[in-house]
Length: 132
Image 1 (tube, rainbow, N blue to C red):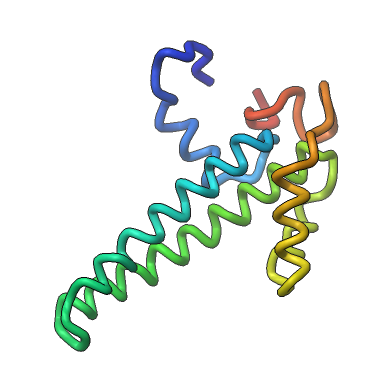
Image 2 (image 1 turned 135 degrees about the vertical axis):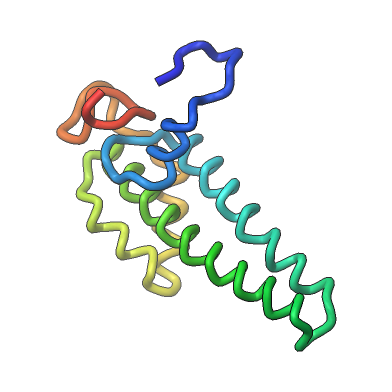
């Protein structure tokens, strides 16, 4: 992982953050990662609203939104799993995010409660895969 704060993270770091469930993430990484996912998801939806309904371009943007939604769904689950790992909780608890009303409370807990300091069974430090 890149430790120089003046350089951008490497491609592998983004792949780990959004697509792999190993390791832990901090409250800030969880929130900012989720915000980035929401922005990426919003772009095709925005473009869809700008084109005439029923047109070929409308169909294309709705399909792009569908694909983006599927990818962002996985990314949101992965971020929640790693955030739960930082709290030393099992990742399967991320399923709570699919329960209406409870999901809002779970999101707030993941954003507000600090992670476990030091090592835990999911990794030696925050914002890194478990195997590093």
